Length: 262
Image 1 (tube, rainbow, N blue to C red):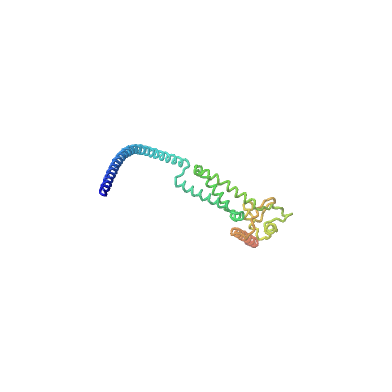
Image 2: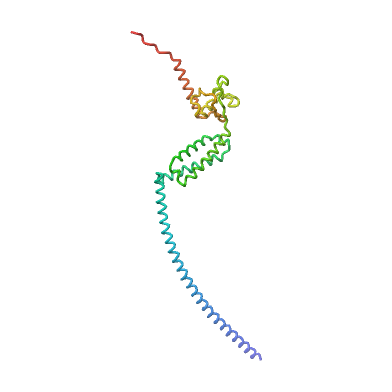
C-alpha cells in the first residue's frame, strides 16, 4: 500500500516536471521568436534613422554654407558702412567705450540726491560736452550708437532741470540806488552774509563777468551754494589781487625825468 502511494507520487512528480519542461521550452522558443521580431523592427528603425541622419547632415551642411555666405555678406556690408563714416573697427570699438562711459556717468548722476548733485554739478557740463563731441563724429549715426546717444540728452536735460530748481539768482541793481558790486552783494544776509565770498559769485558767472570790478544793472547772477571758496575761486582771487597790486605800483611810480636840453 505504501509502495503504491510512493509510485503514485513519483509518477505524478514525473508528469509535473515533464509538463513544466515542455512549457519552459515553449516559452524559450516564443522568446526567441519575439527577439527575432524585435531585431527585425530595430534594424528597420535603425536604417530609417540612418536615412534621416544623412538627410539632416546634408541640411546642416547646406545651412553652414548659407551661414558662411551670410557672414561674408554681413562683413562686406559692415565694411561699406565703416567706409561711409570714415572709420575702422578699432575706431568704432573706441567710440563704443566712450559711449559706455558716458552712459554710466549720466546714470550715476541721476541716482544722486539733490544735495549730492549740486556738489557735482560741474560733471553735468562735462557730460554735455562729451555728448556734443560724440555727436560730432559720423560714427554716432551707426545703428548701434544712434538711439543710445539720443537717449542720453533727455537725461542730461532732466539733471539740469533738477539743478535749476535748486539754484538761486540775484538781479544786479544800480550803484546809485543799490550800491551793488560783488563785495556788497556777497555781504547781503540773504546771499552769503560775508563780503569775502565775492569770488564765488564771480567764478559762478564767468560767462557774464569778465572783470569783477564791472557788473551791469539787470544782470541775473547765479548764486552758488554757501561754502568755503574752492581752489579755483581762491586761484582767481589771488590772480585778481596780484593784478590790482601791479596796477597800483605802476600808478605810484614817479615819472622819469626828461633829459636836459642841450
